[in-house]
Image (cartoon, rainbow, N blue to C red; front, side):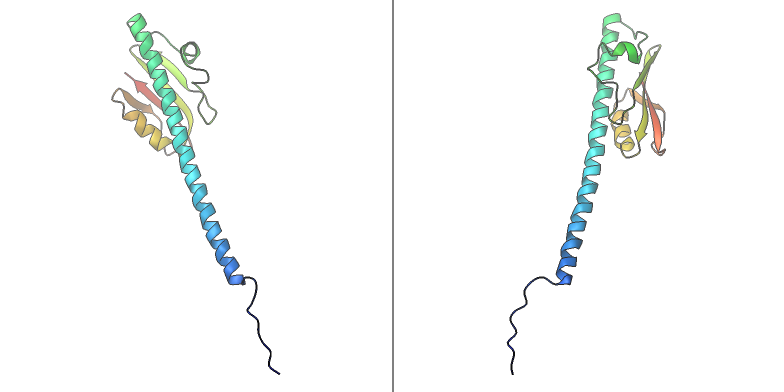
Length: 145
């Protein structure tokens, strides 16, 4: 007797494994993209906060013809709400000494640090007074003159 073989229905194990491998690669790539986009967003947010602090300090110079002894506490009246809180939950500390002021950003994540540091130093009046991007939880201090 001859048996007629009908075409096979369904999918093979090899096809399922191929689909799962492709799906896994797409998931890994999307997670990496999300992490880099999140780091860039945090860096931009903190950079905007630093620019707001600089504008507030420059405003006091124009008003009083010199830097006034400003701290994080009395800058809150000039700055928008939560302008001294970083995206990772720490508080930006601002201190004034003579004709300069220092902005301190505690616990900067290593993924954010290089791009944020490069953007800050791009301003010719800002220098890094202390801090390192290599540490797991570094504090970056910037001196504005």
